[in-house]
Amino acid sequence: MFYLHIPKTGGQTLARRLASAFPPGRAHLQEGQFTYPADCAALGQCLASHDFVEAHLTGQLLEHRRIADLLVTVREPVAQIISNFRHIRREPDRRLSRAARELDPGTFLDHFGDFFADFQTRYLLSAFLPLGIEEERRGFLPTVARHLPAVLERARWLVPTDQIDAFVPLWEAETGHRAAERGYATNHAPADDVDCAALEAAIRARPALFALDSVLYQHACQHFAAWAEAVAEQRAPWDYPANAARVFHNDSDGGGVWLRGGWYPSEPTAHGPGNWAGPTRRSDLAVRRGAGQDVLTFDVTVINGITFTDILAFETARFTELPLRREELAPGHWRYRIDLAALPRTCGIALMVPDCFAAINVFPEGESASLERRSFLATGWALECTAKPARPRARKARPAPIVVDEAEVVLPAE
Picture 1: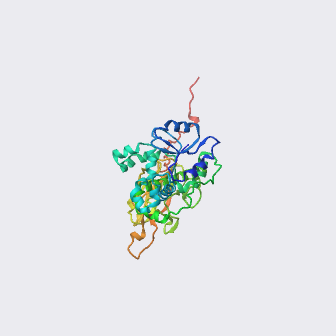
Picture 2: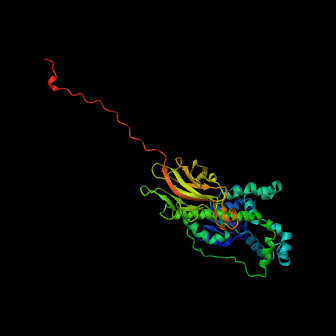
Picture 3: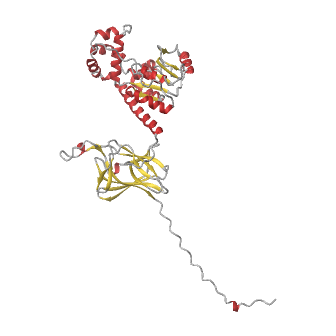
């Protein structure tokens, strides 16, 4: 396991906690940094002789190195710049230290802000490619657009700094390791005379300093949330429960329909219990079909800011569109039938709409002030069979048996 430690992202605390999960001598905590190209062999030897390695890298040391268990932490960018600035300011041997001490934050950032600009994105990319050459050839933004997605794909764990406490027990559950020092914390910034409010205001007044780092941080948050949900699913698999999410079920075979993400709680309607889709464009279902059930049906009786034809269905595994038929049962009351015949008996369905509106943005002034974003109200969930039961075949009338009077039968003489 390799922890690519981007400076000022809480790495020393996390590294010490993770290192405590390995036997003595099997974990390497960073001492200085590995520098390209001089330390290519040294990094390889370190990885080969340890189960866990944490390090700062300078240069593309990971360009041709495949590491299955790669960990990266990403910090909220304004907080990372503040921490980096304070670190530089209190280290007299750093070349920007004097300027950081003597200049006001705005003047300092106007003259030396390029050192902080998208620091985390640059640091991450530079570990995998010759960033300086690529920037000269293409420019920084095209380089990021070209290479960052592939670099992010190489990270198994992408953790926001503010989620470090949550990460360790989930990592233990996923990998089977047990950290001995879960609560360890270190490298807190010592008290100083930095006016953090003024420094933060100066940074936020220059959003170009952290534009791409903000994107990276938001991606890390989403990546971590999805990973945490997947680990929780492994620990306690979702088991089609008999709870409020189940909007249809078969007692005989355990089949049914469950509302997952993107739905509001049930509410009574004129057509029975119903659920509004929202607040996002996507609303997910889990389906477990019984024998012969190959059609999912539901009714939509109210829409908000969309049309009845805007609702589309996709299977969630490959996100391919599913056949869907609509039938108007009455004015403003439509029935939807989704063909599930080609899907597994247990599957996921995503219902998509072009947008999800709040009533305050849709209805005329004075009619509704609701801020909840909703798109359609669904009721009457069911699983149906499309195959009609075979009719019993009509039996052909058999001819009446011929009765022979045994008395009239003449046997041949012997």
